[in-house]
Image (cartoon, rainbow, N blue to C red; front, side, top):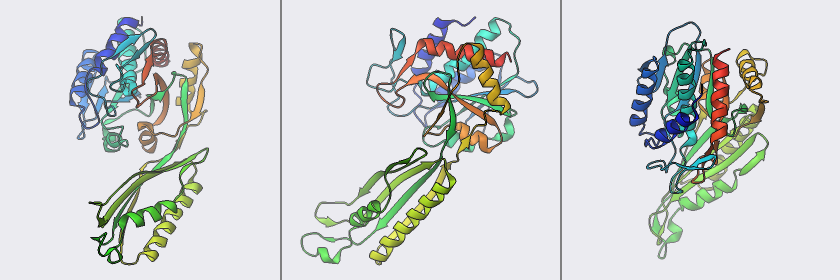
Length: 358
């Protein structure tokens, strides 16, 4: 039987463990200890991702990640009615501690009940938040699963990611020529002016229902009285449409060409690279059908939605693992206003338990 108090305690215990991206060792040790006590053999790949198995043919993967965004150290979980939040000085930690608590309570309660279930493999990555770094480094030769659920979406468990975009990042490093701004500005080449011209040639914001484009950072200059010699521009765009992706890559190429022609003595280095690739689930896929049946068995209707974000599921799909991303009862993710809804957290465990009994 699902133990609501234990579930809450587990979640609160996990969020108290600092695990900002790149500093997940304590969290990895905690999850290893808990999974081993449940009878799993926990292995670590070369990058430090956790792969926990228990034997059996064709295991089903349950997945989450160890890390949180900043500010995620010193989280003080506060139970406020049906919600769990932080004290307002940090994030709430629900992303992804809620997902991990769901997995742990599901496996614990099913073991206590001695319930028959399908074999399970638990995969927990490091450094998901900065761009699925751990998943990209994951040693897939250690993984047996061909189907998976990832608890890593905002909202209730029946909120399912129908499609996730391709994510392209770009970095522009611009070198002009320094000069005294008051004595000989005409002898300088302003890297910041070049950056400004470049940015104005690029699209911004939401371009359509499936596409966004953002210049995220602009850095440059050294002192107020010097024509700036260097500047750096970074950004990203995301789309689920491959034709749009090609057009945006061409837009970037054309913008770079224009500013290089305008400023022939400047040096403009560009790096445009994918962080993850799009996927779209098929509602007739056996894994998706399992998820739908488990949701309906506990009285929930699947709510398929597009997502502008990525998750480890993007990488799993690249490696042939049919993966569904479900909500984990977390809201206002990545903010100081983040909170987890306790009844929905329990509901997620009910769903996961039903799924594994399939």
